[in-house]
Length: 147
Image 1 (cartoon, rainbow, N blue to C red):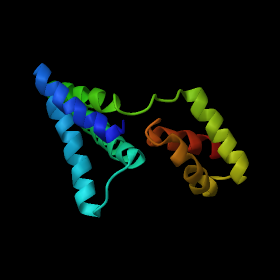
Image 2: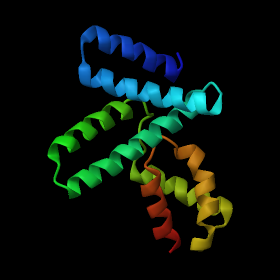
Image 3: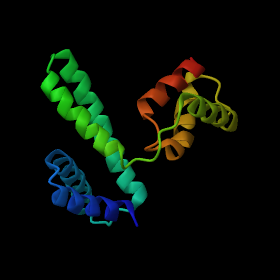
């Protein structure tokens, strides 16, 4: 079963179980997927759906940090709930040790030695880590290693 089919099935399951919050979030996911399909006139595969989900997670994290600055606990709770549901569709997240090992391997493969080589390292890591790690955190780790 493809990821998109699983999401569609979860919409039906959430409707039957009368889980309003879960249903609303899953509908946001389906709307984002459908929007990308309509805009680009393509049928999204699992990898492209993961990109959409990853983008949605990033948006939620940014919103949470903004709401924390504004002391809006009610909106933080909403965003955290949505983030948890969206992350349920992403593959298992990698740990810091695993990410560090992949960074080391990518740096060795590309011969990266300075911050100028960061693009090469990110280019090699992005397909491997997409949906499995926060790319902002990965970027910071690479900067620390190269800087």
